[in-house]
Amino acid sequence: MVQFLSMGIFSRKPEIIEAQAAPQVMGDAFYASNYYYSPAVSRHAAMGVPAVKRCRDLLCTVGSIPLEYKKKSTGEEIAAPRWINQLSKSQPQFVTISYLVDSLLFFGQAFLEITETYQEDGRGSAFEWVANTRVTTEVDPYGQFVTGYSVDGIPRPMSGLGSLVTFQSFNEGVLTTGARTIQAAIDIQKAASIAAQTPMATTILKNTGADLPPLEVQGLLSAWKQSRMTRSTAYLTSTLEAQNIGFSPKDMMYVDSIQASATEISRLCGIPAYYLSADMNTSMTYANILDERKQLVALAFQPYISAIEQRLSMDDISTAGHYVKFDLDSSFLRVEPMDRLLVLEKMLSLGLISTEQAMEMEDLTPNGSDD
Image 1 (cartoon, rainbow, N blue to C red):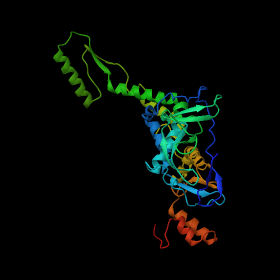
Image 2 (tube, rainbow, N blue to C red; image 1 turned 90 degrees about the vertical axis):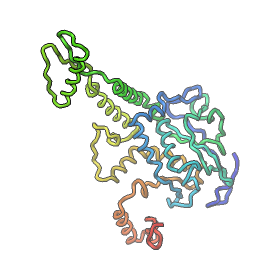
Image 3 (cartoon, helix red, strand yellow; image 1 turned 135 degrees about the horizontal axis):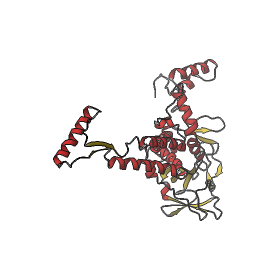
Image 4 (cartoon, rainbow, N blue to C red; image 1 turned 180 degrees about the vertical axis):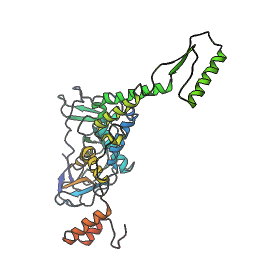
């Protein structure tokens, strides 16, 4: 272990900084021979399914929620390291967080590479997102703990500059757990696409009399087509017979199959089915938008929010005594202005906060304008 000084914001006492302990292998997605299972369905193929993309995009809304840096003992927000507002120098925070959620959804784990460190204590100060397909994993002989990571085949240190910060999800990722469901959706789309590209005649006119010359056949077909545009009934002579062949898209149940597939994918990803516009699941019982969003956070967003918050709050990333939190209340779950004012008025009347604190809670400067 190497001894460093703390970040210097709250204490100058020497502090021992250790990297995260070797992550434990969770789930069944590992070989005993030390390599991670390759998903049965690729992310590229899965994203070609509209229902999967919709679920992914909804979950990546987490990336739009700002991060806060707080003190554990009081819960107050304090001066934050720069990565709270921008983890990577290469792209906005929204993009980095969104792709962390993307990796957790599809692969069950996500990675950030430490590209810069603080001189005072060696903690990471800048990071870069690393695609899961670039990372290979070594585990111990019992397949219980990770012993090493490689990126593009190059081994990486387990701590310090160039090491990987790992984020673990609550399952192996939908590309593994939902491979058959996603592949079924891909197959249904492929079948519908083939049917659309190679249309078949659904009606034939069978002549039971003498064969007609080609010009008369063409004239008969044109007259039949023109008549169907103006009326649904038809008259045929005794030598002609109309026969229906093949199946319509409705008969082949492509629409119903796609809707059923969308419902299964919503269950797979933990998203309420009506967000995917699945016809069989369109009921909504929420009183207002805020109630709907609270339900979405509780049932869909929270596992990913917790995975990111708790990993960034570990001592090898955040200084001891502090933690990282998504600021849901002032962004995604922000209440109506009148409701906020009523709460502030009550808190002021009880002497719980000062006028200055109330203005700060509303992001107002002393003259009453937004800063």
